[in-house]
Length: 246
Image 1: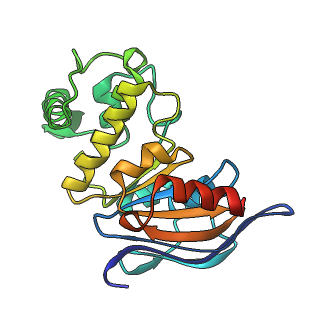
Image 2 (image 1 turned 180 degrees about the vertical axis):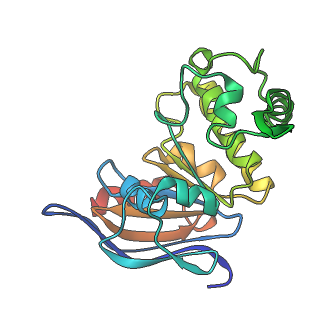
């Protein structure tokens, strides 16, 4: 267990009469990038929502950094080092870039007995981390609604990097993006790995996942049907497994 960041054992989840996850075993090593793939409805999002505290499993055990956990909320998971990035829910459109970067974890300064938001420091720190990711956004005060899809994902990933997440879960991060946006997101994932941060890349698009992960886990109808290192498989082989088992 010591070499594993995430170790999910025999996870089951029901939604009414629907048995969404059927004894799933799933693991992630430190700084490892895992592609969690399968068709829509396979249980991918349900599994990562259990890991990130959105749902509780109906059966099974979860270990994170060697300790047994059962997160009761996404906030609790985040405080433990798990950052989850959803394509549609990652950011607040009506807030600025800097507010999104530090939302819920704003930097403060003391002025006498008072604690005030340290806007200048947040802007400095924000510019620094965005620069490290190669993101060129004109103003930290710009509302996120005016950012491209790739920039939005970059801002969410920058937040995870700044707050030193151990694991970043990306749930369909390339959905709805053009070619340029997809390339940017894949570059961001490579940057996370360089910084020693593990990732789970959830997608049904094998061509997007394949260039940046170390290992594939295939879910079909709530079961793991394959767990294979990238160097021992190909996109065609993975697609064939999904088609045959689905």
